[in-house]
Length: 252
Length: 284
Image (cartoon, rainbow over all chains, first blue to last red; front, side):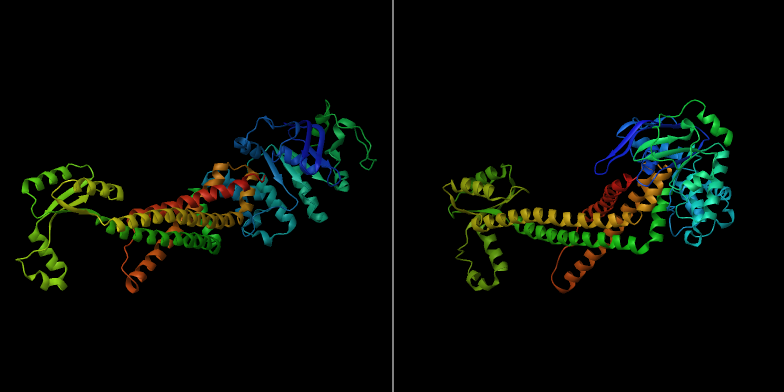
């Protein structure tokens, strides 16, 4: 459902952020995208979200190709891909409920259904009781939960998370990861970018991609189960192999 | 519906900012309004003077009635001519008596009437220019029974020079004022939209359609433009009343101009919003 095929991304000033990256993420998979900062994690997520287009290669998101999806049709991709950030990006001065409702309203949810669906989404992320709280009244972990509820507003197929726990303490981080696994259990794919290898180790059930200087240097589904602290030399990612997703699905 | 609600909500959420952009739009249009008021009155004054552009054909005292009738018909037949009226020696004297009472004494003795009979040639709109009056005057002077044909050559030329200068400066200054107003309005709405870039970002993030994102902002821009237009109208009207009461008599703008101003404010508000929002739609 998400396919990157020989994807390269070159920025005019920075040069290549990604080089010849290929992988496939199936429905309901949970995957970590690891690598040092500047390794191309965010670029990968933005390409899947089609905020950027690849310089070479193709990104496919549930039938939409980066080569053919026009600016006009971008909204269709966006509704299939939820996105959460390290810094939450909630609208200040609004309540948790209003933040989630906003996403529903602007994507055409009928007026009457908005409130109840927003409330249900907040309950799903464990914030049902704090729906009326303003953003600044919530803790970091709670704010991230609101952001996740917002990302789920349009029942996407995949949730992209860019260092979602980067600003959170251990406890909140554990809570967010539990929530991600819950979401994955409902059949949604989760792709979480993180540089925190310790965190990745605590979730052996997840598939792991590792980027290094824009190249996919490791894919647990293809390369087996190596330690994550091995030196940066590794086989380059050739994309998923048969059976890769079966293994991850067992874990889910 | 959502668009209208959001546009009004935006005003409620940031009344100062929205109010300020409306005020900026209003002041910018006020300058244009003042310019329009000045231009309009200048145009009225020039037209009033221009109304008086006519050719007076003075006839010799010994001109025969048949000759006069012939000339009257000949002149009336011209496309440029609206009306030719005959002024007899007696009429001329009457007029002189009423219009120039200082010379009453001089004109008392109606036995000796020094004033000539004449034909007054009024012209149609759009033909009151130096070329036409000169042509008619020359044609009339060709007749032997015509003493003289006058059209105030110097002041007609000057009037039209003034007209040309007026038209040129209206075009140049009007364009300049309109551009300045456009820049101010554009900047004001840019700021208003910049303040809401986070919302636009989130809308794009979660997959709102571009048209849907744009609509409330267009509406907000149009509302700000309309409010600004109303403000400009009030300020211009206040100025007009002030000038009328304390300085000199001026005419108020025709309703059409005001409606055009309001429509321009509204339309321009919407267009500048549309332009300002484009940048933010490309961010994600």
